Amino acid sequence: MSSFLDRILGPRISIDERSKHSLRYGTPGFLLLAARVLLLVSVFLPYWHMELQAPQYPDGLHMTAYMNSLTGDVAEIDGLNHYIGMRSLYEAAELERTVGVFIMILFVVMLELAAYIHTRWAALLVAPVVFFPVVFLVDLHLWMRHFGLNLDPEAPLSNAVKPFVPTALGKGGIGQFVTIATPGVGLILAAVASVVLVAALFFHRRAYLPLVKQQRLASGTPNGC
Image (cartoon, rainbow, N blue to C red; front, side, top):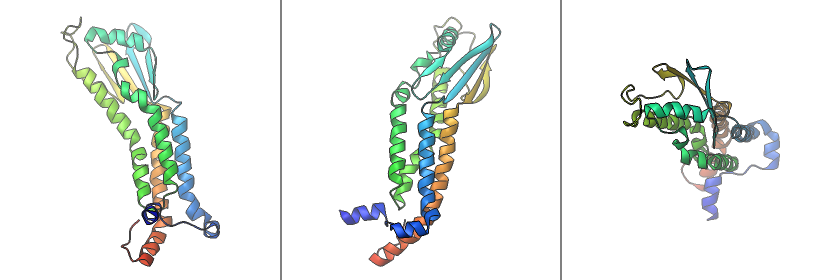
């Protein structure tokens, strides 16, 4: 069991060795810490904005999506969507909003664990966090597509509007309505965290791969990290 854990955790660095090469061994941990902070901060910030422009709304209607809630003119937008047969926005991504904050906490824990792993297994903990912003946008697009392509045929204006795919990012719209969707600060911070994590993996490999190879040679097992 101990041997198995050693292969997962990788070589340990002595205090003297770490002090001599503090930049080399400290950079991966610092970048992982920075990514954790960015993710934690992002939980409290908006992840997505949508503005709906229409002649009867000179100031537009605005909706903001957080990890676990929707705020803004959601009721008014739902009222307009009702006429074309689109379901309430509150029905979209209900599961995602319920577990979103817990997933972010899990991500932070995974990055904390990755800081103590000096082998290739650290990448398995980091990878889900790296791809999270892309997964968020893909999930958002799929929900928008599902709602736009499955309009209620019994809606008052069902004959006037054909099924469509609302834009998850950028400018779109239908008829006299124009929508402008933009990423929120939270999603931007999560994307920055992804870039930081890619850099962390690069410095992690540069710092620990030589040590892993030495360890494997000493034990007579194939090289790897």
